[in-house]
Length: 351
Image (tube, rainbow, N blue to C red; front, side):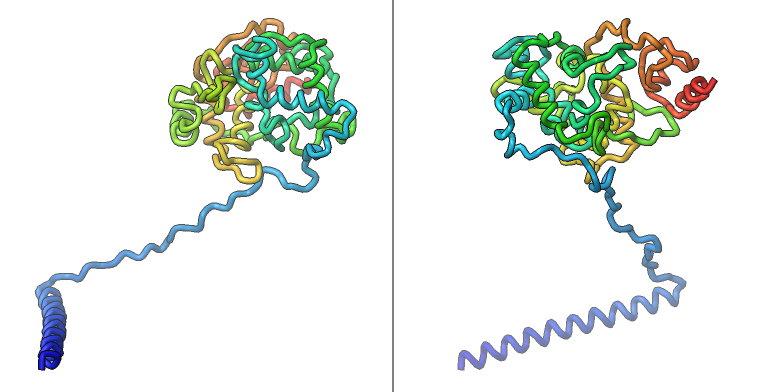
């Protein structure tokens, strides 16, 4: 008897819900008719005639065909000077541990590591790699106006990017770094620059790079690693940086290659922020130029560069310090727009 009563109760409940639903629908229909009859209008639903497109396709900066790749590290022990090569790579990867402010071997640099600028110990395509070093040195460099060998080029980095002192050319450390660079480039024909060497060359903007816009890029894309004040993050052991300082007393000085805007912007485009590569760049060209302008507008150590560029006609278009032969001001040489400068320099060279 109880089961029959429960069944009856459930039936009544379902019927009640059904009746309420029907009544609600009837009220809505009649209400709409009355609303329209009295001059009202039902709401219009907006149809997006331009629906959001699919995510923008990311294209590699260069194709993989023929790109330089480093020799197989697993085979390095087969080299007769393998001990030096291995030590050279260690010095590139952990420069500060051996030659930084608290270095085990010497204290001649600012605490940054070579691979802070030369990604993956100088082996990353378009990551400022060392692929062309052995094949193209010695050579005349316009910045010094002299023939430079590999040790001289290495010491340029110690004095500029690492804002330090030169390494003795006869030291075991210098010999090891040279051995590592020679091993990296051992398969590159003499005089040739392999595909993927150096840095990516960005297209010029039609405007000056904007440090204020770059600050927004920095805050959104860079601050989480390099810090709000650009001072980087020290390693827990105190030797060097997990993320290097981008400005301030422990960063590269104003004589470094990355202080040229095109160099820094190209470096950023292919390698930053963390996770970006030449195969999968994250920033747009404009963002790369602008964030480079922001970083390079901040305070950093100064270097005496009075002996640089003895022939001023050979200064790069984005060298930020005069004098120049083209008539453009320092500010435009630093931030752009650069196309007019390039065109003027081409015209001067043809005279």
